[in-house]
Image (cartoon, rainbow over all chains, first blue to last red):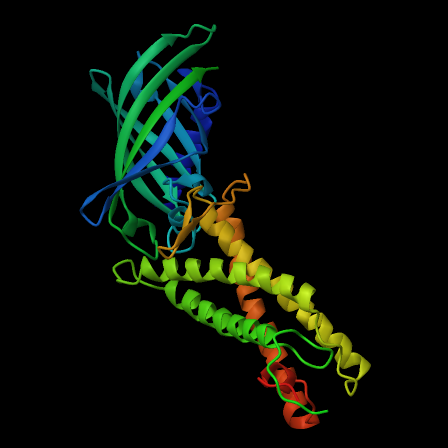
Length: 186
Length: 189
């Protein structure tokens, strides 16, 4: 199992650099990308927020979707639910423990072309020192020349994780993640 | 001439009534806030105290900050008694240093607490009496940095306050001097 993980890790990292498909860097600088979360508040409503700082890149070719790759690195200390004391608590060792685990990463291992612009991005998500398999259901939003001489492609994706799977001290159930990712072709 | 009267102001030998009240009120409040804080951070989300306890902690903390600012002003106005002559040079220096350390740690813990609550950039309610404007420093994750300071300095102040109390008891029971009395006796002699 370890060998397979290692092999897949090597494979992903090697494929990320020289690409058959075009390489994109996620436009975090222009903030044309966001990572959002939503969790149930006691079953009464939905508590929403975001991670403000992250980076990543992906490769994508519309003629060879299944060769796509993506890697996203999230700065866990940028957790923001618009409530400083809750953010402080979530960053503490009851949840994310950001002083110990400063990053959360998603690395794709396989992308399935579901047709009609839909993709299933299968990979592993590491948070709080725990790695779990995760599938992001994504849809391509658009692709083409931007007005400033660049070329962009953008996607939206959703995935659901369970806090219990990541070894948090406190468990408030499931968290829905929504990603809006726009990349600039390199 | 010997006469007994209640004196509000400090004299060369005695703390006045107002200084005594402020001292003992602060002592009681500091230990209460520490206990409340120690207890409330472990509360379960479903506890009925989960919202109330921090609200009280913040409210009392801000009131104590105001009282402590007044206390320092009063200390300037009323002056403080001179060192007790029977104390050794070391004791004089140590007690003066301890008072300085206690004020520094008290202000640090109070201001850092205020800064945690300020990080939301929303007014902080002191009970239902009044609101205090938040103090936003403009640094990333203000609540985390000030939270760490608040946590450790709170322990520090308890340690220093206990040392301070032990020293006072040593003077009272072992040296049998007036050190503790001049902070406890209501009437001057």
